[in-house]
Picture 1 (cartoon, protein in one colour):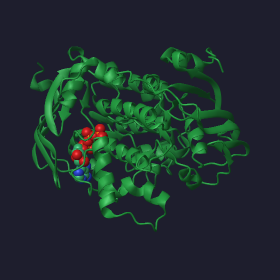
Picture 2 (spheres, protein in one colour):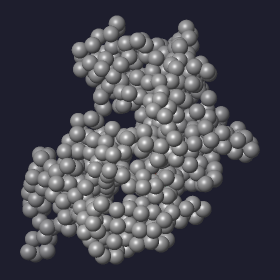
Picture 3 (cartoon, protein in one colour):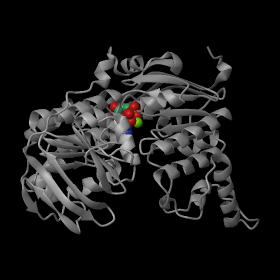
Picture 4 (tube, helix red, strand yellow):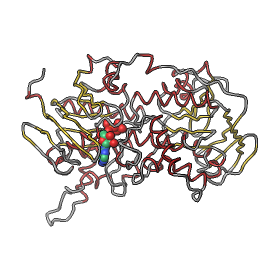
Length: 509
Ligand SMILES: Nc1ncnc2c1ncn2[C@@H]1O[C@H](COP(=O)(O)OP(=O)(O)OP(=O)(O)O)[C@@H](O)[C@H]1O
Ligand SMILES: [Mg+2]
């Protein structure tokens, strides 16, 4: 047992209410100096809320926070930052239209002796900070938006380090990072830990938790379940604790019986080209088929999905739906042909936070039917309840505003929206990102079941090879916006996909 002296932070009997929701119930959280500690729990368990109580975004209803031996009660993120508690969110909380250097020093700019901002010093200091603490060499006078999300996260971390934080909180920082970028982040995390900084790490990737974390605190339904050493907590037990029921190994990793494609082709493209996005793509997708698009981040998987949904226009080639060549001017053309696209970036293309869960779910169906053909309220309620139940969306009721849902539950609302249109072709771009392990395997199974039982065609895009291997009956490997090869049923394995991406496996394309 660690003595109290080893603890940099103790949160005790924390309660937090939202109208109609008890988000945290008597929660305990103990953080040691120089450890990486994961908060685990299903979507809506209260992880982000606990972090937000700690950083002064929400004020707790009751309970104690003891930081470095003293009771604290931060009222804003700025106040908690000044105390040494910094947060890096998945949605980078920096300003896109300021330079990297400005972002690092905003609110604490170096001044000349006349009191003006000392731009030169700021540039030099920012460059030095990034190089010395993170080994990154970039032009700090470029706007933040010039850099990738991964780099932006590194910059946010550099800022946190420079403010001499004692606790660094990373809430789902890796969900849009590539494997390489994640490794780099882990290296940085380990170095920070070794200098005595404590890190709170939230992620739904079990693999990552077991790679990087020392200890885990599990929350379930707003309640504290326990704290554990990673080394002595088998994965299956962790999942059981998160879900509150005994789970057998094969329930999680179950290789659902894959769907056998029918003969009818639903959609076919021939030499489809969208300048700068899709190169000479010929593919066909049959009914009852789950087809995967595999490739590295930025390989052009999403661009293919966008072209199939009419979000971008071809310069060459053709698209046929049910055997007929069609002209596609916009997504409505594809929606009318029963194509649905569930995008990866829920913030930009997804949920309408001010609308209710019900309104969000019926949105695409309403648009497809025409805005003037109003859907009876009873029908809306029925649809909403059906999908809330099917996807286990955690809401207090269907009239709850979507902005009040946890991140993972917002993601589920979008999937529900597109399922509600009863598409023939459903394109799912990273559908399980930010989704807890239990629901994740349910979504995988759902994709397979829709194909097998309803004859639906599903395009499944995921950066997680295991997920693709479990769900897809065929996989197209994409590199540099081009289809490299296809893997059919018995050729599908993680190793083959990796080899194909690297160009060393050619399947039978
Ligand atoms: N601003 C808010 N108003 C009302 N309820 C909220 C608000 N923020 C969160 N909640 C509710 O509090 C509960 C906990 O949400 P929280 O965001 O902490 O979950 P989480 O564990 O971070 O989940 P995820 O893995 O999906 O990110 C959920 O039931 C959520 O709907
Ligand atoms: Mg969260």
